Length: 439
Image 1 (tube, rainbow, N blue to C red):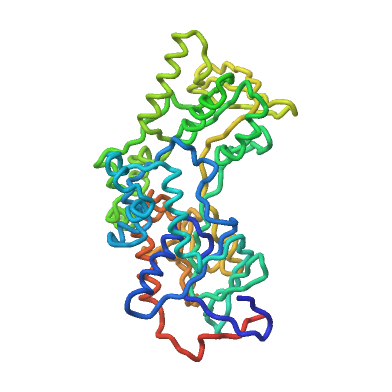
Image 2: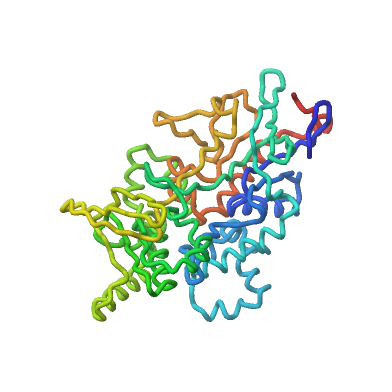
């Protein structure tokens, strides 16, 4: 796969940047397409992690998925696929037990195991432990004919199309610097061993969403001598709206409707249905946390403390502990908490794919708010001189709705990307199947 001056390099139909669940689902779609009739799609994916992994730091044993098992990597696109969660269960000898469980929502660790099982079936098209360094345009006259993807191991892959699956990045509030005692919840399980040896006395958990509630519950369970202080601006944890009608926002048809809508309607839809995903907690977990608070009130030993309608205004690592000043939004009163760790469950932001695109970045169109313009088939709108497509898996919420960063529509989305690539592909010319690397 290496490319040096004067050497011929193979041209892939697709090079995928990142190999999380979305690009894994795309690799499966390619494999199933190639197993059928028609011209195969050649693809290779680059993933900086040493092996497949999806939010490993939050794979809490008791946590369940918030989407149905039928919204796996394939079923919504191809219900007969051998890559389905049901087939995974059958192979693991748990299909009957799962059916008897009468639950649509698998354990998160189980779904991760399913992802690893599926990834192992297509590992011939992915290079792990390799990070994309840059993407350079390859010119054919005035046109940009290909993309050269330079990797951290010194290899270069040439592509007709790119699919950017760079995932999400943990988000900390402005002014907060991560450290050994101040960290994002995505690191939770990686920090547990050190915490167990430290015999902690107090934690502060900032945030009001599902992850924040899960972190508070886990720390409360794992450290029976420690106090857990949950800090959030709301009056209480808000329940996730997973009612049947509201969940239609995740239907494939809803993507079409959202994409065609004007900006005022898109803004309203996001406000109306934000509670299906953002800063919302499963009702069962809310009830469990409330039971704990009430039980401790009865027993007279309060370890789970909720600082609602509040915010942390100053968090300082003193070297031996971390001091958090928590301010009431209604009275302005401040409470000083000396803690062993402050955990920020403050969400994620999509990675900006254009940071890797170099000279291609300015050729990507943006709207009045500086957001990337994205076509219905998830292609970035580019200058007409760019012959290939640059597709996004995520970061398209402003154009395609909430489903752009979630599992709910992944199987359908990758099917649409596959269809777009196949439909747009020019008739292959054997004379140009190999090209001299541009330097």
